[in-house]
Image (cartoon, rainbow, N blue to C red; front, side, top):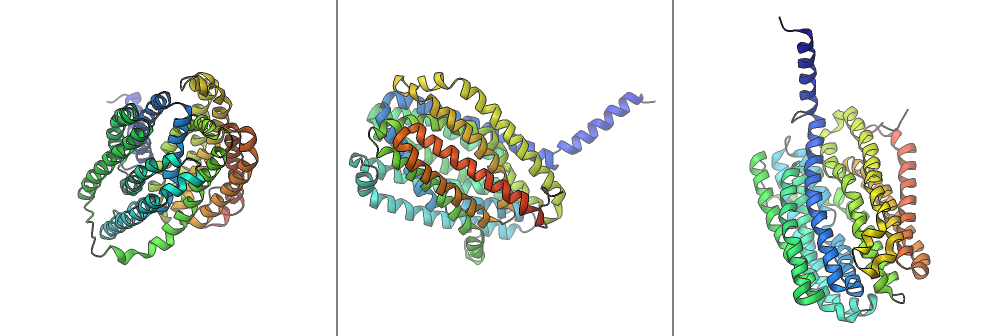
Length: 452
């Protein structure tokens, strides 16, 4: 006879196996979070190391120019990506099992559109680089570096769509492998380029890393399509072109507000006396803002795919997952931000003596990121429910607050003023989203999680 204790533990083990198994909601979410953690640690760790070394090699002013070039690429990248990464994630997740042929058409559609829009945006940056550098950036000597950065723009925009396809397959292990490959090469390419050719070499290093990412993503997508028996059909992909207007357009418009608004706010700063030196301080602190967000980002990456895949018939699971994700995201943000705030003076000293005054800037950005990363979880739920126009409205509020407050604070307080403007914009954005979830969402049939 089997002892009662053994039977009891056997039953617990079976329940646990069901809850955390490969096909269970918890198992899928945990697996996605773990692999997102691995990929993010590798990617952000490599970027931070490369940025610290590059900052010391280039100096504060040149490093500020390097940060502004990256900000410019991000701004143009919004128009290149056109929300196609989110589109690929949502529809591949929804259709990969129920309609693999259509999922393959949407992969082809997203890729073709990404190639077209990315090429257009890269050519636009090539054309306007001299005027942009001379007038807007107040640094005509950066025109050649901006031209080189157009290659980064093209490759990163296409890679963003590729990553969206992989996320739709819940292939977070493959995404982690791509990040590993890029991470291994980020430090030698960026630092080696800075050593050999200064600022221009550092930008060339970014192009080289982007090429590696594009190739690795393509290999991973082909493998996932074979594994899931999803045929990529290029000849009929435009038959699903309506989703570009239904989903991609509002996703694009929402994204088109954020990066350009941040770029415009940065332009306000660099056009002040000693503006590029202040931008160097902000760029150094801003890298750690990304570090604060990396643990909450573990939730956002698998969340859109899983929520989209749950569908209308899984409302209860949808509610549970969203509630838990919001709470965990906030806790992880606080957990990550706290040691950075405590050690902010030592962190900024690592960039060099000229960066030490940026301690307060780092603290303010860390606090803002706790807020923004928590709200990002709700943004994934909004996207999974096709509420993209609401997302656009919230981003519009964020952008207006950021620009108006930056115009007041950056001229007076420099890098700290720009960080303060970011904190204020994130706070107002969070209040708007909270009001929406409290008063609007309870009336929706598919999402009742904030109702009574």
